[in-house]
Image 1 (cartoon, rainbow, N blue to C red):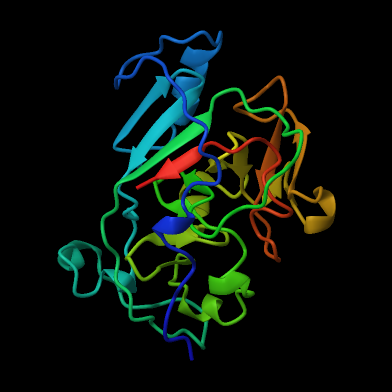
Image 2 (cartoon, one colour; image 1 turned 90 degrees about the vertical axis):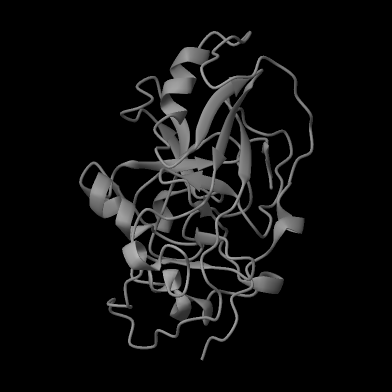
Length: 254
């Protein structure tokens, strides 16, 4: 039985501490990067963000991390009346962990022109990216880099759960988003700026064997008609990301 969801905490939040400067503001698109306006519109697809703007070569995305769908982990919280829903999924081994969803103050700084890293870095415990509803993506490990074998039994009916500080997150397919947007849809971005798509592509379910070691590949997508490297979520480990970030990661702070 799963008793505690560890997953990582705020000490795991910054895989890259490079500082940047630039023009800030919720409506600013002033930057030296030619496609800043386009980039801003793409990142505004993160509808769960409380604020999105361009700062230098980065998109700044602020989010409270609260899922917009119901969850058993809203029990005994200030949102329980509207958002609590008992577990009604298909996992017969489901066990509610003792953590409850809490509002966060997450600030993601993500490159607007991602490039392949000269030397790749492993994804940290804690947030490795952000989904469209503002909920963080986590990597394929539980605490202490353990497999998700037991932790999956604490995932709610939408495949998320909170860690000890109440930070709700997805390690695997966010089924609420794929139900709303489609299994082939853009679902968010990792910290290196590369987009994350669902488990379907051109009518075919994507498998790990279709992807490289980082869990992605390159070609045109609806949002990037000129082509871009992108990750896909699959139904098998490592689910979202493989051997680390394909590009140079930005930062996330709390």
